[in-house]
Length: 316
Image (cartoon, rainbow, N blue to C red):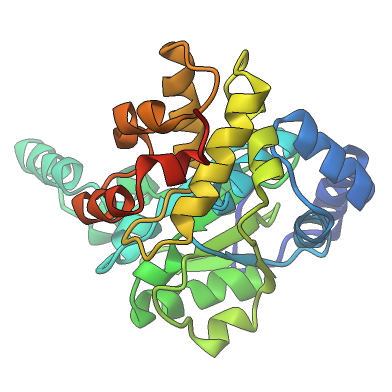
């Protein structure tokens, strides 16, 4: 495999120390990390900034939980930008397995190798067919093999959508920054990745997984904070409009919606309203742009029942 990743042996102290020094220079303390995240247009409160700082400096995997749309995935992306390092993202879903997360063998290339051997009247050696040249690397293995100088960020997104068997598969990675490939042995990271797991709590995660992680719950932000986020993401948007939309999204979230809007929908909504030249959110503006913020027919019916004027905050 790539030279930086070792098989069987733990990474050298010098390599690990060098990676730690590189990270420490970038983010020497919580305040500097929060400032760097802010410079990258990701607003993290003190609790989240502290949790992320510990995740990269201990280092230890971190589990971010919260409702959909609160910025869990964006936190991992922002962290990778701050560290100036690659982000390897694995989108989890029911039925995901090791071949999609870690590696699989290039069967077409293996068959080609067999045919070439037959043409040349050469012996087909099984070990040769299961060597590195036939290996297709997936996000987990790519993160483990990342050569540095700073660790990669590995995002296991929506881990709650995967099944318990896949959770168990991740234990070795989370505990030892290592993965085992039966045909090749154990691969240990020279620069252990910063592992971020996210969950929308569609099911309870196994204790064996959560014990291996730091934990942080991300609350849905206040309308004022949402407005600040939106203004950064939609340059030129009117300040009153961003606050109107942020308040409206918060009101909509108080309803029993199947798919409550989040920060991403607030951004999309303000972008659409701005393109239309709308500076305040009144009932007419709400009625003409429902599709930017609500993406479910039953949710639309429920919001209609409360009234566009209520959603818009009663602006004339």
